[in-house]
Length: 411
Image: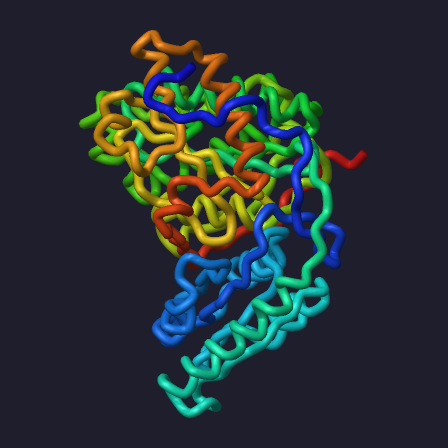
């Protein structure tokens, strides 16, 4: 037993029910997304969603008016995510985002989609009223989505860390790594990222590459991250990390690396790449080409969005200092590394990995608890952030080139 946690009695069921999509994938949630296509449409989209707070209606969007291929690719992947059953696109009307192309892509996946153009709908109040009616109609369609059996080998699970401290690399991160090993052994697909926080670990990554040509690509991705942050004059190291006892980016990197476990790395993904098969993948989050749009990801939710765009049904989020964020579309399971933080913020945490430091549980026991929580969350159990109504989402400008030859398995 893990003191401070409240695990469910007995093991989680090996099978659970999901939602079957027309494109053949299965989701663990049945979400209708309301998507603003420019910041000028954000208020209307937010007001459309407000009466459905606490339900299966989530708001996502892109704030920019100028076109960006990365944002378009991300939005196409997110609006056809397995957890998404349908979409309402909210456009001002004069932005550059290709709303027709996005709608066609969603429609071709078999999902219902509607588009609301504010400049053609009478303005703010009229658009909000029309949008709420469209959401009501969309939810009725989602209620008719067929349910099917799912098993763990059909899950895609991502992981990130945020608000790390000196305990993160000792408790929560390596416990997630062991949980990843169990998930990989069960046939699931697992994703880790934060290449900007793996600087100094390139030799360890290369040693685990499943193919010779992948070794070089993994090293190249970390070298690119180091150059990118050097050019910006800022590493992935926040004041809170130092306050929490971390001393160098290398120390932080080793903790972040431990979340990946020990399985062979099957491939290197770019944002919105769908893994071609089960196993462990590294997601390269650092932009390609010359630095044009600033930092690789401006906060943790930008990283969660990229994991979701690669198909993550849910995300394991480790934190030592404490974090309250969740996510639209995919549940976030928060794993607290520090027992003091857990005692201070229990309502925001799902698992207390700090009990390893207290001597109340082993790392393997916490890894088993994480594995069981993944299955229970997939079966419908709400996470702490879901219960609290967190639906954070951010999507910014970025330049991302396609994954090169050798990055992904071909068999």
